[in-house]
Image 1: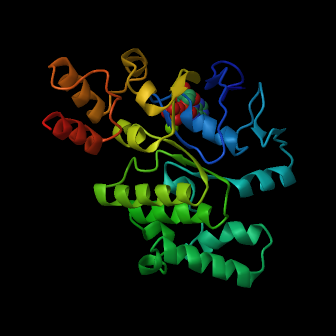
Image 2 (image 1 turned 90 degrees about the vertical axis):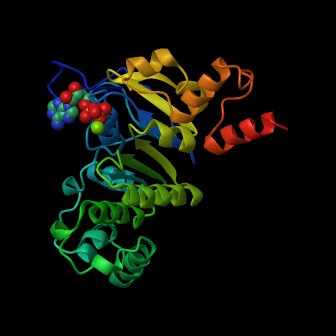
Length: 271
Ligand code: ADP
Ligand code: MG
C-alpha cells in the first residue's frame, strides 16, 4: 500500500506489504520517519491508503461509518502520546466511552469497565481527571480504553517510550497478558533487547516499506539491515558473538534467545 500526507508530494508508506498472522507477537522497528505510526493509522482506518488496500480476515476494509465502527471494535490502537487518545474528563468516562458507543447496556458497560480498572490496577487514581494523571497512569488508562473493547488485534505505538523502568515493566507485563489471552499484538519499538526476547516476528521498516522481516534471531543479527535502520544488535547477541570470536563459545550454537540461555552455554562449557 501507499500513503501520502501531502497529496503525492512525498509518501509516508510507499509499496508497503505486510501480512500479520493471528495470535502473533510482531515488533515493528525502524528509524524515525520510516512509516510505523502511519501504518498503524492505516490499520485502524484513520488514514486511508491512496494505493492498495487493507484486508481483515481476507476481506478488504470498507470506509463507511458502520464498517469503520466494526473495524475499530476489532482492532484497537494505543497511541504513542496518551494526550492524543484521552479526551474524557474522568477516568471512568474515558474507559466507558468506547463500549457505550458500541451500544452496550449501561450495566454491561459498568461491569466491563470495573473489570478492566481492577485488572490494570487503575483504582487508586480512578477519581482523578485524566489530565492530572502521570505519564505512566495515562498509558495504563489508554491501554484500558482498548482492552475494554475486547479487540482481536492490538496496535501499540512505542508503548514504553516515555516510561520509567517500573512502568515499562508494568506495560510489558500487560503486553504479555494480552498475548496469553489470544490477542494478536503488533507494537513499534526502538528497544532491540525487548523485541529480541518478546517477538515472534520482527519487521524492519525503511523508507515506508518493509526492508526485512522474520524471527528476531535472524533479523536482529543482520548487521547490514541493522545499520540501515539505525539499530544496534541486542546485548545478548553482541555478547554471544564476542564470546564466539574469542573461542569461548562454539559459533555453530544457535544464537541464544536471552541471557539465561547464554549463561547455560557458559556453564555447560565447563562441564
Ligand atoms: P515513524 O512512526 O516510523 O517514525 P511516521 O509514520 O510517523 O514514521 O512518519 C512517516 C513519514 O510521514 C515521515 O516522513 C513523517 O514526516 C511523515 N508524517 C507523519 N505524520 C505526518 C503528518 N501528520 N503530516 C505530514 N507528514 C507526516
Ligand atoms: Mg512513530
